[in-house]
Length: 307
Ligand code: FAD
Image (tube, rainbow, N blue to C red; front, side, top):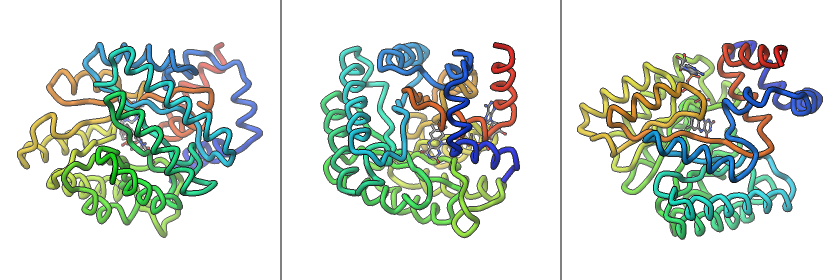
């Protein structure tokens, strides 16, 4: 892993740095480039703008690693409010939600996470939209896939996320490529040990292509989450040669990253979904985005010093 990436990921877990950055009067614009805002209304405003530009959205209420039942409940309530808002504003056809199980109680016990995620799924169904379970670090993969299977028994449209940096993912892709499945394939955002993950970015890319092939050959709905121009091109070509029409798979990118490419893909007939995070707990998310790209870090630091 790049030393800068390791440093920033370490900072993401460091409480002293967390307090300093979180309380620094960081320019609103810097955070707002990657995060929709702190409230449900902010999230809905950004969703409306993106949908007006022909894009679809998945919304993430920021917060993870909750070991407090009350905080998990607060997260569930935030999603229920959001889903009500999306339905009321007529946006549910184009906007779904992404949920981190650790934010709804996975670290406390699997049952609580299942029950809380089920409440969100039930409301999403009423609103006329879907839910995708984000994937977190490798220690939670089995538990997340178990919860997914349980939820899919009632709501077959619940989406999964697989990370191509994990050795196991080609096999998981094959297991999840069946009819009705929705699988988001990403490279993976956590610092993982070489026993479980490819340390070399090139190997991660090769694995991404192998997994993409499995998903494209399958009967489910693959969702390719990447900003990597080479992968976007390869997937477009592979999809074409496998007879996959635009609309039978989608591209996904993060809010604020390559927005012009998001519009270009949508304008060329592809389904594109933008992952939009919001909420007061934006710090960990922002640090992961900075870790991915030194240019983002420079952008952030420049904004800090030029307030
Ligand atoms: P990278 O290797 O980071 O970038 C490849 C290339 O993309 C770069 O060389 C550059 O050409 C281009 N690029 C990247 N960033 C920029 C930029 N800011 N500006 C211009 N060009 C850029 N991870 C998880 O672990 N679990 C999840 O549930 C999860 N969900 C995700 C959902 C979505 C919709 C997306 C897009 C990502 C998600 N991720 C998730 C994060 C993902 O795993 C990666 O960490 C992140 O997407 C960066 O990988 P990348 O594929 O964009 O490639």
